[in-house]
Image (cartoon, rainbow, N blue to C red; front, side):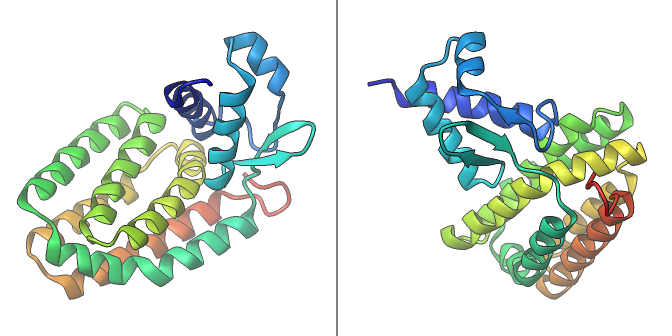
Length: 217
C-alpha cells in the first residue's frame, strides 16, 4: 500500500499548482496524464484528489478524473458571507488567547508579506496571508472553529491572488493586516472584532471590483 507521505506530497504539489493558478480554474485534470508526467501512483493520486475536493479546490468527475473548481462570483459571495458570520467573534476570542510568541510570529509574517508585496510576489504573499490567518484561527483554541476558518481562508486564497495580480498591489490589504496586529497587541477584543470584520468587508469589495460577472475572474 502506498505511503501516506506519497499522497501528501501529491496533494501539496497539486494544491500549489491550483492556488498559484498554474492549473487554471475550470481546467480538467487527467489522472493518466499526471501519472505519466510525475510518476505518481493511482491510489495516492486519488487520495490527494479526494482531500483537495474536501477543500473545495477540485471537483471529482467519476470515470474522468477531476476539474479545478472554477472561480465563481456566486461561490465567492457565499464564502465571504460565511466568513463574515464567524470571523468577528473568532478574532475577539483569539485576541484574548493569543500568546506573546504568536503575536511575534504575526509581526514577522506581516514583515514578510510587506516584502513580498514590494517585490510583486503575490504568490508568496497569498501563502503568507494564509499562514497569518492560520495563527489567528489556532489562537481561538477551538479546533472546530479553527478548521472551519482555515477551510474558508484556503478557498479565498485563489480569489485574493487573482485580485492582487490584476490590481498589481496588495497595499490596502496589508494596511488592514497592520491594524489587526496593532489591535491584537493592545488586547482589545471589541476592536479586534470590528477591525477584522472591516478587513473582510473591504477584501470582499476589492475582489468583487476585479471580478467579471460574466466569466468569473
